[in-house]
Length: 388
Figure 1 (cartoon, one colour):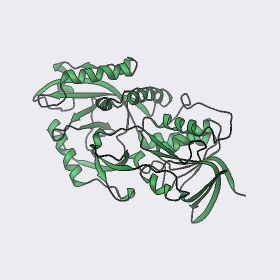
Figure 2 (figure 1 turned 180 degrees about the vertical axis):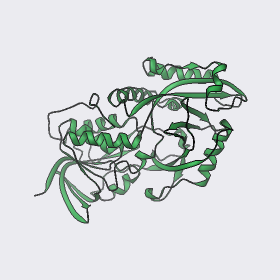
Figure 3 (figure 1 turned 90 degrees about the vertical axis):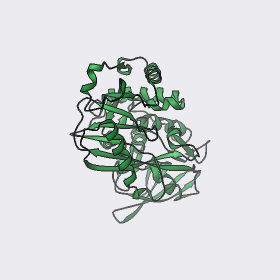
Figure 4 (figure 1 turned 120 degrees about the vertical axis):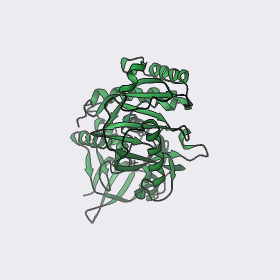
């Protein structure tokens, strides 16, 4: 007998598991297919931040920042052992392009969009505090601002959300490779391969949450659903020997004025990230020598006396809208492509942020209301506790 589900999700990254959890909370039957392992792709190769997106204010993305700050507060409440607040420092030097007045204005707006909660406040550090900042150079230093954002273990957060979904009845099949789907007026016939065995099931709706593989998956669906034109953008990170004792650092790279982070990561520190257009197969993404040089040069500029020993490196791929504009300036808003706006059977997820996974899932369920059967909700993702 062919198994039938309300929803089948393809992809075990943060957005896939988010949809699985939200759908299970709404009372739907759901199967998630993951080819390799939960968080095997970009969802374990991010900057590990749950943040409002301070730099998005430069692009006037006020709604995205407000939404992200609200989600940060929810995640800190429901997953306190996985999402923890950290102090962030923005140093301003004589050669820094963003002057103190600009930084103050941005942080004031950030606090305002966050509701002026205590965790959204900032302050300017006194000069006597500068020597406590993990070896940050004080040559030419004019001001240091401290604000707060949150940090997580992205892979563990992804796995914890899937455990929550399973506890509510969702089914995980992993490793299982999606091979094809036929979409008809009454639902989707889905084929996949598990343990060298071809299997099939039926679903009312198919959610393509394959991240950088999203269009690869769309190619296997008949008839082919709408596709968005996107660029894959590589972001490299270096795990550096030696920890940080006083929080995180948001640094302007002198060469191109981009921002990079130096963050505590266990007994070590995490340095990233880059933004380079990627061509090729997503599974082949690797940290480039030029990215190593770029990041190490930024670290040497701001922390000249810290050892620069790399203990690990990784690169992930962002999915951004195709455009001629600089990658740094492109919107991080989620985009959804549906095969039929009146009765969607296929939804493909393009882009998105780790911080916004929960809202993305809710947007998808709203999009599918006309297609999915009525069910009785059993939980709410805004209050359901997630444990690491």
